Length: 295
Ligand code: GUN
Image 1 (cartoon, rainbow, N blue to C red):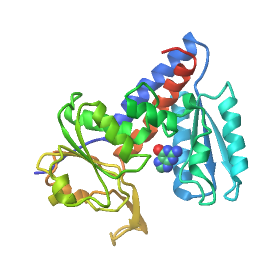
Image 2 (image 1 turned 135 degrees about the vertical axis):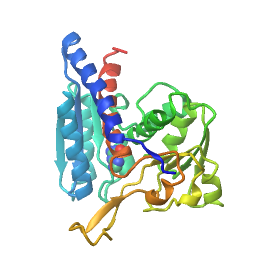
Image 3 (image 1 turned 45 degrees about the horizontal axis):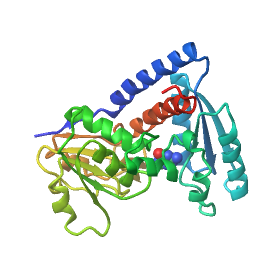
């Protein structure tokens, strides 16, 4: 048996279309265009690609984007001054600081300076607190996209599903656990110290892999018919002798093995990645309305 592919690109297009319509409606009825400010520090190639894709998608949807590139040796003061300026700017609706920052910078301190109503990444203490309390707020994009993909595969009602999230990062693992809990799932957070990880994963109706370890989740960790959401994006040497490319992208899941057991599975690339950007666009639209009291 082979799993059904969960088409993240298609789901992202659907969400982007809805966001595009929302943006158009706002500009017609309220007379403004949602604006996203993106800050990139340094020249990390992967981060440059992510930022380029975010700015391009914003343009396609009708969201205005402002890009600020700071040098790799920028000081904490310079970064914080830029974030404060954008937080105070009435014309800016969303602020995203591309992570990871260069090692000499204090990520937490920088993130906390983002005005909570503009926190389109959902990473500030206020946003994380609101998520954990079940209050309305801006939710982190990758976990939000993961829930949408699970629903696209299994239907809108996920209640009672056993969800195992592997990984406890602030960006993905922890918020994913809360978001699936909001969907009335029974959630287990597994991590590097978890005992019997394969057995625990095998209980999952929905298995979310977010550890950043290439091909870690094997076929025999997956329950027959489970929905597998692979959040990992790992660049590894390309072992295909027919390809000119030296490297390739793989997820945290051994896709070729897992697809023989799973019911539905996300590919890498083309799974969760496009959804992260689509959810960022949706969050920017939502933030622009929240700040003006339009929702
Ligand atoms: N780096 C990798 N993923 C993300 C994300 O979702 N947001 C930000 N700001 N940086 C990232």
